[in-house]
Image 1 (tube, rainbow, N blue to C red):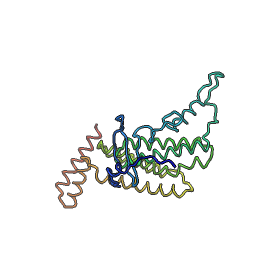
Image 2: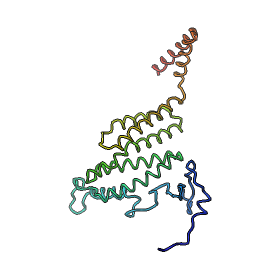
Image 3: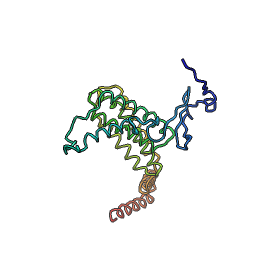
Image 4: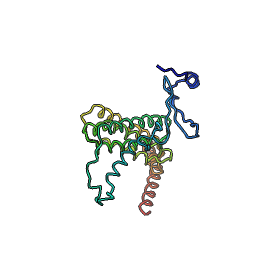
Length: 264
């Protein structure tokens, strides 16, 4: 057994493990941004863009890109015969192809998990969207049924992470209603997913629905009220406290607002 004279202890001591402060963005030797994650026994490093491990399988950015290129080549018109490749239906992903895609999806999963933790919402959206595209690709083209269904157990979870990240981006823009719309649409999407004879799928479905509903409720509770909603709240309070003149004034203001809305 060859033993290299390399000890990482000083590096690990300089960044003690703290589960609440275990992710940081740093700069590589060439100035590119990278993400580092402190684990109990070491440090992991992720590329922030491209494939998380920085590799280029099949001389392409990712295995998924390689498979997309295979499909595109099969669909392309044949230069010799002139026949349209779209007529071919023989493109299939073998068990080995699927295994390679599954392994790659795990890399993106770990990255977007950490991106979510540091609230890098845009990159979380990008990576979850990318894995959902991989799910669709495998479901459509995998030769074996077990491969077509393998990733589906995680679909509710990935949909949830994608929706929450998109909603957070809308909240940063103070677009509370758009954030709520994203969450409600995703709740409906998960509710409409076909049932699978898979315990993980059922657990992730229920957890995701619960988390999305809770997030939507918190946004609804804390979102700024519109002018009309403020008037309606004041009206209810005036009626409860029997301040009827104030209530009549508020009703008139609401009526004028509604009439103005109809005219415009």
